[in-house]
Amino acid sequence: EVQLLESGGGLVQPGGSLRLSCAASGFMFGSHAFSWVRQAPGKGLEWVAAISGSGLTTYYSDSVKGRFTISRDDSKNTLYLEMNSLSAGDTAVYYCARISMIVILIAPNDFWGQGTLVTVSS
Amino acid sequence: EIVLTQSPGTLSLSPGEGATLSCRATQIVNSGYLAWYQQRPGQSPRLLIYDTSTRATGIPDKFSGSGSGTDFTLTISSLEPDDSAVYYCQQYGIPPLTFGQGTKVEIK
Image 1 (cartoon, chains in turn brown, cyan):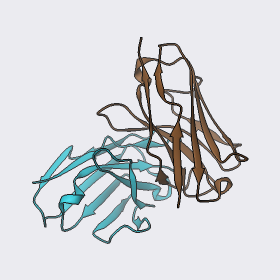
Image 2 (cartoon, helix red, strand yellow):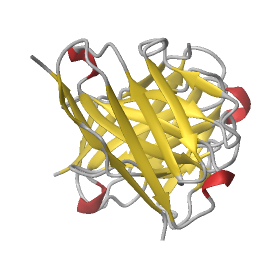
Image 3 (tube, one colour):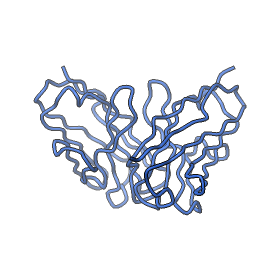
């Protein structure tokens, strides 16, 4: 069974940092690219970042570029999102989503985790 | 950046009716790399359609996608209470990948 389990969310002060993790199981982790997608309370989906299966290609939304870093550790079957300089606008549920292929730009997100809530507030 | 605009914002329909959801892009979606997702209340999104018209694994044929270029449609036939959800389109052909703002489908 495919499973994606996000962790690392919580309350953080403005200007602070947080690292999210997504532990994957039930499939060949290295054969897939991944995305992070977030959803502010009561709002729609916002794509945040993506990383290829090799880890060599990454893309970011303009709203997080320079502040967030997506990475992966294939030895641990784990995806990460390092978030710095957080502001209230980053408050959201953050979803880890598997891309159905090893590359990013020709395949959809075919499986999603349950999400982890990040709240940025003083 | 490709902006996706979904319409209508909300659809309120009766069981058994059909629904037509629209997704319009500000530029041509590369190779039809357009997906539709369903998000029921309190749940994570689920992939319904990808590559404009291909149903994802396990998705019933009451869901169908069509379109090309900048105009895409998700059609849901014979609505059931379980179809109450927000539906999002996403283009994954040109970075940054983008989502539409969603269409809420309510079953009366």
